[in-house]
Length: 382
Ligand SMILES: NC(=O)C1=CN([C@@H]2O[C@H](COP(=O)(O)OP(=O)(O)OC[C@H]3O[C@@H](n4cnc5c(N)ncnc54)[C@H](OP(=O)(O)O)[C@@H]3O)[C@@H](O)[C@H]2O)C=CC1
Ligand SMILES: CC(=O)[C@@H](O)[C@H](O)COP(=O)(O)O
Ligand SMILES: [Mn+2]
Image 1 (cartoon, protein in one colour):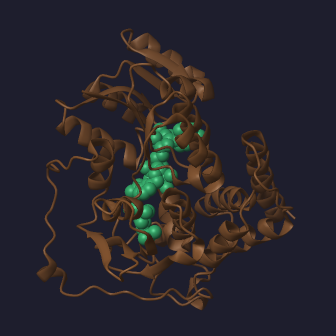
Image 2 (tube, protein in one colour):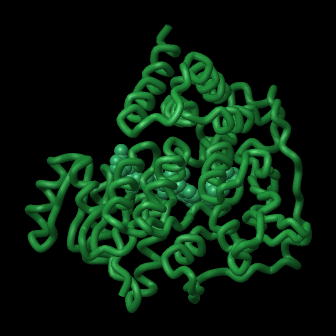
């Protein structure tokens, strides 16, 4: 029986993880779950999976839950997250928290020698050099959940010792993939939230539309697979069927295809190296799809992608600035306070205003993240 903590259990990935675990109750026991503020969904989740421990953001929610569910231990805040990320009996922590908030629990879980199934890509973007070092030192597994990185990971199986020539990282192009840059002026939040192929949380859906999601994934791939940035090629692939691929030295390209269903990537991270039945999984019918399209992204149209390559190549504290500024700008757009194209403008301004620090430690990263968010807020209030 594998014992699991799910961080961010009330989110899109979190709920799909719950679904996977419910379908494999003979194999997985969910010991602990965390939520943010969605207490109603957390209560439904508690009834389904009966965890021993739950964590929420606010003390008042923890007190409410503790009163109602006396058999469960209810904790809260950053200390609560650290607690459930490090419970003795837990084998693997699936981190599906959105944003920078996922960093510290990942670090603490690794230090407590837990394997990590990582959906929270922001962890690797801001602290890839710290995380990969900790993973080695603590002898734990870091298993990708992000669909592209799961595809790459799957394409690497059976090829130990063979050098990667290139990674082909596919991108749907997001909600506005058919619009020119001029047509992006004045686009609505509602339209930006309509992803063509995936149903996901709001932040990542906006990131897909700006292509910051793909930019974050480029940096995520660099750390997960130990490649140089010029070995990572992004391809716009509107059908989202080839989830990514690896080219080897002999020019053979091995990829992973499937219908867009995150439960596969989640399940593979939890059952690796075994493959199991994906309950209600839809088989891919290539004859229905007919043809697959691949287009080289134009950096002028998808400027966010260019910014992410720049941040990744310069490295140090710059990816943390890109991430923090993007998180704030993404939120301001969703709140109707800025225009869509201002997201990348604000991120670029923050990057330009920042004095890069090489190898920042965790407390420096916390400060830099705050600085980048404040910078964006000050810019829009000028
Ligand atoms: N959704 C997808 O298909 C994919 C997502 N990912 C990545 O997975 C991560 C999660 O994405 P997704 O599931 O879409 O996001 P959601 O917004 O749907 O869920 C986020 C989860 O994190 C919780 N949360 C939010 N803020 C905090 C905080 N400050 N402290 C603690 N918990 C918090 C939320 O709680 P609550 O809602 O209760 O407030 C919720 O449980 C992201 O990093 C994303 O990039 C990667 C690939 C695909
Ligand atoms: C499902 C998943 O992994 C997302 O990160 C997805 O990749 C988003 O689609 P885009 O390719 O549009 O960014
Ligand atoms: Mn992805």
